Image (cartoon, rainbow, N blue to C red; front, side):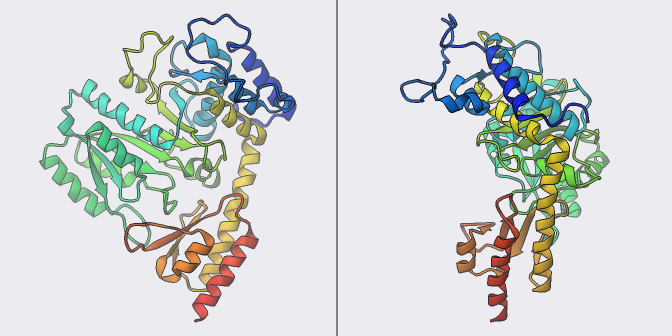
Length: 412
């Protein structure tokens, strides 16, 4: 563990106060050239006494604009204090969680997992075009049918075809035979360069892809590829509960990772994180942003520095050991639920080391789903699954109520 350590509340407050003092202060400083400002004091009361003890709220009021990629070169000097906080967050996540070498990664705090995933697709599309002189028609995205819909968005936006890979119904594993057949077909139709998205916790099932299911077959057919990991949901739980994570930077095939801080980490919404290896993010440089100090290598451009501070506050409140204890409790609650379902002979899917349980719809009535806000795999046609997500607010007493209701249904 290099940088992720728990610190006291007073130390957290002192660190954020110092960072804000290193940013421009629009109330006092002569800053004639910036369109950004602190929040409108007539609408947002910025003189409240409680703000001095609420560093995240202080940062929202100060409204720092984080633009550019702060792991590359220089950045806007007006917000250097909170930009350094963002760099500290990226160091913790890249090095202490996903096992990158220090200073061998780039990234930024994005507006969410969707943006971070599209950033990855954008980088690799341009990489293949810049480095391999690939034509757009020769590039293809590969991702499973359980993959988040942001990949479909990215495919549409970037005009890159998407191969939707079948998974096995019961265990949600990649169907390698079908994948290889589809790959052969794609190659015969002129595809030469592939952007692979592997999941660390799918939205519906919490399933985790085995990257070898893709990379072994791609290498067998001697095609160029880059591997991105969508850990938007699983990134803040799976690496802490397993000793065999094949989807971090120790795997030489992994080039980038998406994590969402506004899911498991419980940061404010609009807080995704993008990480990648060095010498990749430059493929999406927006040269036209000449008035920006440093390089804009992001999809969103301007973003809230307060979100970086919020993530930093959470990480520094727990420390790595404290975070492990928190997610371990969720794992134990998930184990308890699965044991109860087993005793009722109710069929479900649960990825080990994840806190999502997805029950076959034949065991869940529409009334029961409505009562407990269970999420179906489809709202548009006959669904086959309902999922339960064991977040911190879902306690065993809540689960016991569900089990009692299921016992009533199964007894009929």
